[in-house]
Image 1 (cartoon, rainbow, N blue to C red):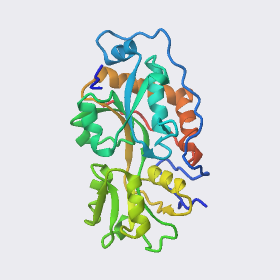
Image 2 (cartoon, rainbow, N blue to C red):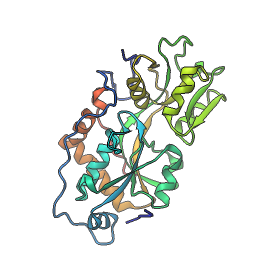
Image 3 (cartoon, one colour):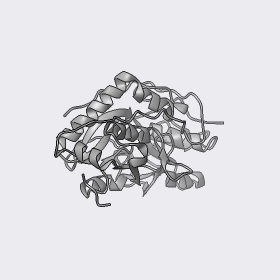
Length: 290
């Protein structure tokens, strides 16, 4: 084991035909806890065996993204990514109390995995070829699409990225969103968290915020009446679970857990108790066993 110890969202056209259904102030429900495996054994020398023996795991996730990973009143994050992390831990025989949650932002996800600061990263983490060069991915367990968040009323008349040539945009440094939007505008403000883009949008310093549509939906939901999602996603963003490069046994194990959760309904239960408070339940994507 590694250890360095009213809502104004436009028709949000997600890749899986997701639609808006309601709103909460955090996107966090009360998920049904996945049953912890008892007397489970793993092959000696594997990451699974080490984590199971220790009875603890460190998982990196976002702390500022409603619906997927948002820091709760008790200091622990809540959201869909958090529930996916709990599900994996449970299959390792680890109680929720044995999980240490570490805040990860877009720029530090790979270093945290490479340095052994975390065992996993479940943090709206898009799988792409460049990242595969330094870490491995299980999944995807969800597919989003990059979109734009604008002020309610959209007086700037932004309908998609092609309208941004003479406008300014805020996103997060080190994210795929930053790389993607650079094809449409050079006037980019990059910060460490998406929530830090909301102030510049309110003040008019930027005309839009860009990242994955589900993240933007959560931000709009959390700030009812202030913002709206354009509803014109222009990329596909498969979310994966990051782990140490070439840990094939652990990656296969996590993929097995995901596929089982699709079949037994625990994936859907996790969604409906978190992101499902705002978005309809999509079909889970096929796991890519590359």
